[in-house]
Image (tube, rainbow, N blue to C red; front, side, top):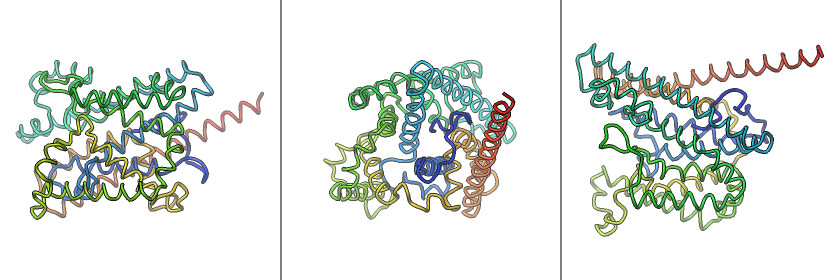
Length: 394
């Protein structure tokens, strides 16, 4: 969830041809669609998502672009407004995300509790991680306010809150010493992966599903790229050797992932290699996941240049709009995924229903993004007219 989903004053306007990199919004929107589909269990449509074709998934895309856009937006503000004002704006945005999380938590648990009570099916509470809330709602609510208790499908938002709340000193460091800051981030990630150091969750025997000490690497790397690092990597991205290695690694990871569920490829990974690469931890952001994301990024950048005319076509506009309103679309997608799960369980899980709910959910997410974009545009136009009127009267 990139920070450009914030207030209209902080959200960059749709770009001129030479302005904003629409690929960021495009792939953030795609990540939101994939997250929604992945959150619907027993849904054939989630087989099209990238988690089934390699080691990384939509989360890496999501967090990287969040760091990239946050660094671009607030990096410019540091130059104009100073460190203190910019830090206050970042913390204000983190607070807005925190309030959104609490609101989402309450409404989401109410939705789950209603379904459990109305249909006398406690399995929903167990499946969605809500048993603790139903057993001791007062304790669970306090733990949720501490970001320690999260029902299923809500782990990304607390991760982003923590990453953004700790971003002011990191952004300052990225502006002053970008390479050193990235190196420190790498060391923290490596230490977290080797030691398993993580934040505690609720119940007490659990830890955060997305270890922030590990996932900060993806966010900081995105910020490093957003402040000019991507330009410095241009020679690698456009290297034929790097492209060939990237394609080879993507193909290899595809074969490994396919071997997990396709019997003809069972045993393709030698036992010695399996002992080295497994488990491919999502919690601690396994190096294989990082490498897969980097390889995928190289191929995507080569295939989709920043000035590709298709980026401004009406066909891709819905996905871009979702990416530009990521916070609201993500929260809406959480509700929709549970509603779709309920329909598949209680009405019919037929293939046609899985596809219909998947398409309908994405259509509703697009409709919300269109509405939000229209409202934001109207607000900006009204603010511009008021400013013009004040200048005219003075």
